[in-house]
Length: 133
Image (tube, rainbow, N blue to C red):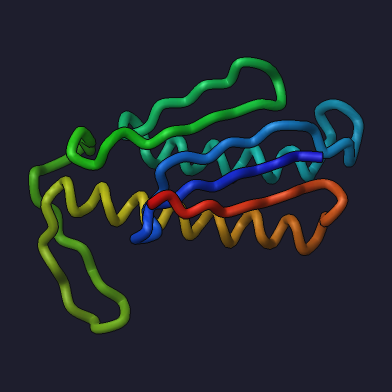
């Protein structure tokens, strides 16, 4: 079984995520559950880029921790324009604001993705969300 622990702050922003274990849902290289878990984690890690640190001490184990929001350095200009779907308006955000939005969305993406995997494969994936105060 793959155990995933998602840790967020009280605002819902991603602080860290850890995953450990094997789903045993297919032969080596053909396990779709392991592939789905890997896809979610790799996509978030690549999206966050240098704003996170990753440790993978052994196969079937991953620990991702987000650097403090004030230390984040995103690629691009100091300010970017963000389109807000709900209102149809645009807002200019600085890098720190964008970094916080990215970590908020990353946490949401992981929670939705892993909750979906647990619903479909309850005997293969265990997911827990922790709020750090």
